[in-house]
Amino acid sequence: MTEQVHIALALERAGWHPAAWREQTARPRELSSPGYWRDLLRTADRAGLVLATIEDALSLSDRFEPVDGLRRDRVRGRLDAVLLASYLAPLTARIGLVPTVTTAHPEPFHVATGIQTLDFASRGRAGVRLVAGASAAERANFGRRASGVDAFPASGRVEDSPEIAAAFREAGEFADVLARLWDSWQDDAVIRDAASGRYIDADRIHSIDFEGEFFSITGASIVPRSPQGRPLITVLAHQTVPYRLAAEHADLVFTTPHGAEDVAAIRTELDGAAAVLRSEGRERLRVFADLLVLVDDTADAARRAARRLDDLAGAELASDARIVVGTAADVVDEIVSLAEAGVDGIRLRPARQPADVAAIADQVVPLARAAGVLRDAPDDNADGSETALRSRLQLSRPESRYVREKVVL
Image 1 (cartoon, rainbow, N blue to C red):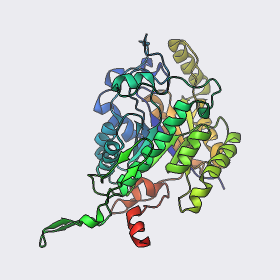
Image 2 (image 1 turned 90 degrees about the vertical axis):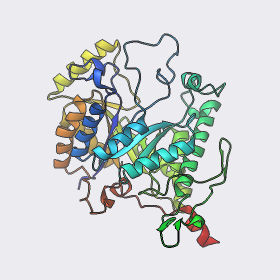
Image 3 (image 1 turned 135 degrees about the vertical axis):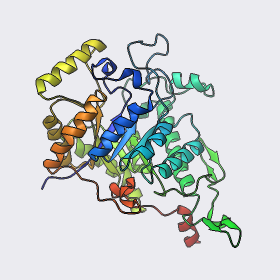
Image 4 (image 1 turned 120 degrees about the vertical axis):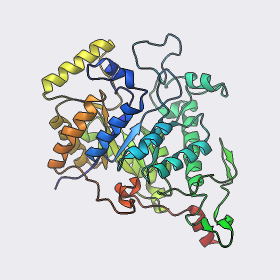
């Protein structure tokens, strides 16, 4: 029997190819318009995709790109991902909405309340993708840090850069604070008893009293506990230090195997990092594999489209993820191979938006379903519980840690 996986989508302005905005089917004048994003998410939602991540950053330049001499042939500027997801929440029905947040500059309190609000707006379909780091361009936009992550180490290993290692420790604390704030209201903290005049039970709202290396936070969230209890925390990981962040703090990790043969090694490292946590009751980390895809009716047409975009960009497309240029059947072959290797899901990065989003929805998903590899969404329940992102990923709804602590006492 073919193993089944979820399919997710990674949205990035005009697409993941740097010249995608110059594609004939692109909508470059609409990248900041609500309608553009509504159309993309509704297309993905109708296709049954489990979630969509929305890229974001805190500078005009890309990470590690020189601040001076900004290239003018790339898309610059973007909408705030959390606010965009909140706009999209009532316009979609089932797809999970997972905006990207950089952990170096925003306050975890603000992010926690924003994602809780998104969880309410979407009726339990919220998540967040955390990105560690503080590049020079990002620091310049905030003016509060003199040093940070200016370059990737020559070795390519995160642990060889004290600045990047510190950024990942900060991201871990950030994730810990998010979860604590999301737990700070018990589910039954809101009473609304007009007769007694009690709107809340103050004993069921808890100060998190967090003291760490990077954050010192006293108090509770201002938002009551949201539909999922804890919205989904996700990260992208390529090597040991990010894998450890995922194992310790995330519900779902996006990985970048360049073939099915890489999946076993990735899972072994993730499982090793998570072994102690699983013994403490943490659920199994969901592992998704990323593919960057350009889809056309024939393989030749796809290759011509890719060459045309590469010529416009002045360089061949490169990515941390495996690149698949071909037909929908070629993409499904890759999905089947990765599913058999043991991943829980595939996140597709469309090279061109909206063209490849439409191809994923109209061609890839039906072929994957016909091949028996797609894990379809369950039928909706009247209370919306089966559309909750945690439910679709077979993750339980966690109880507030403060309930457990009271029981122990």
